[in-house]
Every structure is written in C-alpha cells, then in structure tokens.
Amino acid sequence: MYYLRERDSSPTDPGFLLAHDFYDPEEVDDKCRVIPLPVTGRQRVKRCLTTSRGDVIYIQVLYGRLRVWRLNDNNSESNESWQLSWETNMATVGFDLDYFPMAMNPFDTDIVYLWYWVT
Image (tube, rainbow, N blue to C red; front, side):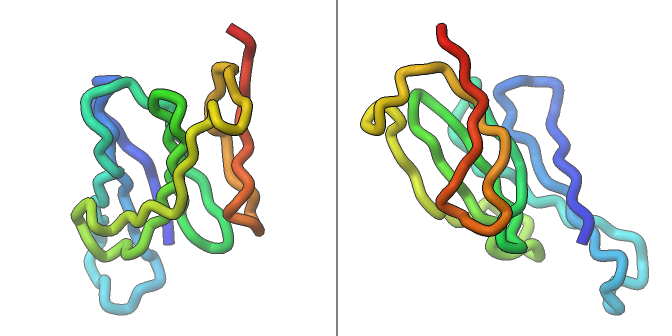
C-alpha cells in the first residue's frame, strides 16, 4: 500500500491521504482512494503522519492536547475511517513547552516522539 499526504494551500486545512495498493488484483485500473484526515476545526494544528505496528497513525497537537488517530479502514472515503486511539493534555504531564509531533515508536503505540523548544 502506498500513502501520500496532500493538503490545500491553507494552513488550517487538514488535507487528505491518498491510498493506492499496487498489488491489489481487484484494482485493475489505476485509481487512488482519497481519505480525509480528521477534522479539528479551523485552527492551526501541529500534525504529523507516521506508522506504528503496521498501522497508519495521524498525530495532532491543538491547544496543548495531543491526539493520536489510527487509520481503521483505508477503503472508506469518509472521516469514519479514523479512530481516536488516545488523547492527553500535555500540561497535566508537565509539558509547558512548545512542541511538535515528529513520529511514533514503530513497535509501541504509546510512545510519541516530540520535537520541542522553549518559548
């Protein structure tokens, strides 16, 4: 399966994920599925797209809350294809710094790697 993240020119647009399986025998024509990323409103969200344990993972940070979404069904072209795996308020764990999600541990979906800087 090949995934590609696309977004519009607007920084508030969550964008979408293009999915194509080159080895699917049922897809004789070259068509891609369009999977919208989870919508969080019109705010500017820090986000990244990564993989962990064989799943596509979408991580977003909005107002100090870290949300981790897992792609449930790459055949669906709706927001129901994403499942919220977990969410945490970073202030409750002592994170008062400005941070950006970078990736997730490839073997453990409870570990997120963040890039942070002091503001």
